[in-house]
Length: 473
Image 1: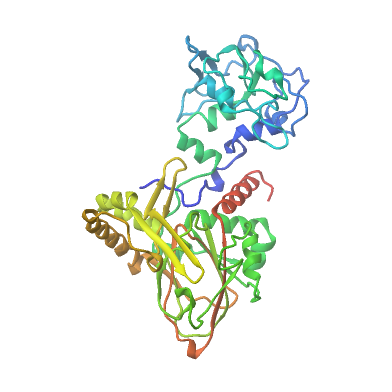
Image 2: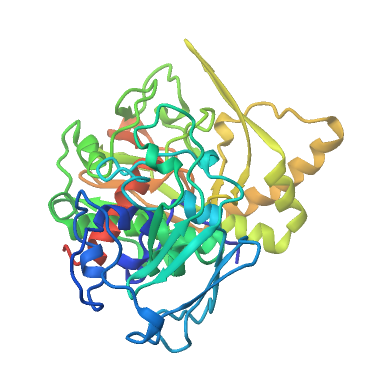
């Protein structure tokens, strides 16, 4: 299966305190400890950070008291630090028996308050200040983690508030969670744990019929559990629905702001979807509107879209949804050459009407391996003339036709006719949406919509998942 992350993340069942990024967690929660007991441990480290910084409780001399502690090996050229937990100990990870880290990386990511500001949580030096020939001058192993003392200070670039950092002897304290968990594996494994990224659940008509989530408006708006359910469904399936939303004009904004700030565009903070004369957008007609995504002609299309039904008494106007990631998977399996074409060939999207002229080129299938993400860019109503050499044109159209063939398959589409008081929330960069034609002479159809940026969703998702894992609700 293609590895991809629609919007993000890891299921709540796999999220724990140890899977959150220790780089940020530990330096904010470590506190100075005056205890002489070698058994004082992560409870102290996870408490609020005190203004002072001191080593872990008591060093373990020759590992007499804690014989299961990991062993540390420093390469002769100081090019690596290798950590080897004993098999069967609490530090041992079957999927990664040993962890090898670069000293430059370790010094750069020291989590102490001199290196990470305790209140802003921001880094207090630049990566370029770490000497390339820095080495470890001493090692101390504790039940809570690893202490390294450095042979050199950071390069002084002037105007330092902490000149001590330019001198040798700085001590860095790393919890085992940090160096054995989040940062010891591959970059993708690290992102899975610290950002809660994971592969979304691909769906077709049958699966969505079985898994579709309907949430009560009050539960979603007033309980952390309700918000958690909606966010988790968005991450995994890219779509959920609300019932019982008051049919008031600005309620869609209230629903959206439960997740994050609204994205303001030239359509406004919110916008009306209904048939109007001389429409500037095909959505504002009664015509059939095929499967598409919104605002692909902008540099950063919104991550979420919400549509709230205020009125619907017309025949027709059924909403259609389709998981574009499912279409990508099928195309890659059955036509890998066409998959490659759509990941490398730019498609033109534009909006030129009235006082607006927007234009952006992006591939139909966009893979971001640095962030383990997949996005799809598909919006036929807003597609402009592709800017391709003549000899490449036919192959692109063939690939796009095959991709569209999956998108239009009825067995991959989920349909629902929105009723007043219902609101759909979906991932605009994953879930394609459409609407069948309707007859405005036989009733009224009025939806209110708005957008939320993807970063707002990611932010709320991660903090909500962690609160759930920490037992806060």
